[in-house]
Image: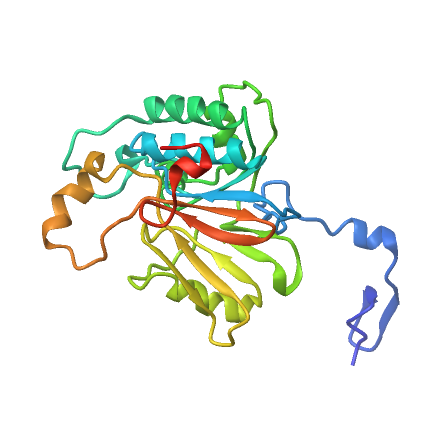
Length: 282
């Protein structure tokens, strides 16, 4: 049998195979094509105090909770905010049949840019994409770097604090079993934090999700980790597809909210669970 691994075939006939060892020069010629979509490596950041908010669905965002997010951050001295997907709504780009008048792509992008610049005055932003954000790539019919979409929304303007963008659904915050994985899962659960608790058992860390638009906290089966669904930052009354189906929906009611983490301890920030005045908000 000819030697196939760790060598280069130099010549061959029916009787003999001549080989030589692989060299670094040989390996350098084996490269990934320039048009190959190479996934980002998972992003890990080290934070003790941070905020997490998701599902703004701009231009359907909740102005009251957006203001509360900023005020809570200022009051608590928080300088890091994770946006866990669905920054944009992009209903006008949806593949579903159009039933309502919708805000166009350009107007949605410009408004998102203004909100990013506002948040960037107070926070280092970490942003991951959600399923609504990906509607642009689906309509385009090809790959687009999520960083480019955020840069387009900012119209090339820089914010006071940095913006870190990942193409992955998630980022890691800190390492080990005291850490978190946060972002926008592709599954949907009607039981708050249930899916996140299952992920926590796999990832061996705490989980903060999005996408569900509901609120809850659950321990993992082993009891070592927490899973959190912190709600959404959308205005349901402005969301046509929500209003049209709500009367006959079997899904739990949406609930606005976000998560505050101080000294690695999470707190869900929503009406009924927090005294807003104690955090400089109303």
